[in-house]
Length: 337
Ligand code: OGA
Ligand code: NI
Image (cartoon, rainbow, N blue to C red; front, side, top):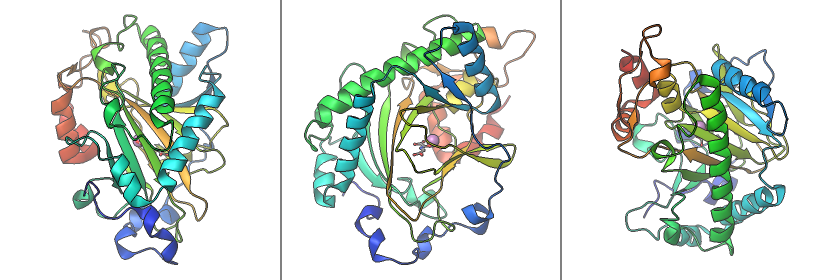
């Protein structure tokens, strides 16, 4: 079975308390968390006419928070609504049907999993089910995507095309702001995007559990669409958590660890996590911009010159990812030059 453990969505409503294996150690429990006095992350209007101002805001937010939200980003509301509906319907299907629809590739490129998908390494499990698959611009792998709910491939295909365009547009603004060449990210650094649809079921004891661990995304850039009206994503800044409240039709954008390395530590791949709620179900759709496995990741020349030396070594993305998977986000401390 291509699933580590049983999907939370199949049993959560049978419990009035959280199973022991889902109880986080005290220091990670949301009830013991320090909340930030900062109430929200910056919001950037991509529809504004002052390009320099947009660039300045993006760079500043990425330096200070590693996170921002974008509005007037050009992705049609109808497409966002349709895509969210498709994934809600997917997670609402019977478990056996979800499994069939997500197990079409013998190599496992498309998969349905629960918790972090790496249960053995986790101290406690996470209150979440996720569907994940590659979504490269070439269209490769589409034959392994689910065919249900009806329209899945067409709608998710269109969505991932639009998100790629938006991601490259944001990366171009970042490049311009930092003095990197135009299209710096548009080839091998963004060739392997992945889409993950997360489903966080209602949880009877949100104070004890987490939907997703405190983590940094091991990629270039992530664009997240959160279901409206439920706040659960939190960003760590100066040791305290800032909630990321959903704004209707906005996307949350965050820097990945690879972008932190490429910018020689100037932009931050901030730690973030997901708390649970007692109701209702929460869905999010994460579009991850990932490099090719053999793309060399290291500080970009213009950002690591004689005046500011490279603080990270350069190595292939595949190797970096392996380190990250084995050691977790804290491999970063060892990784610095
Ligand atoms: C992720 C992530 C946040 C969310 O997928 O890496 O941080 O709210 N998701 O689902
Ligand atoms: Ni993340």
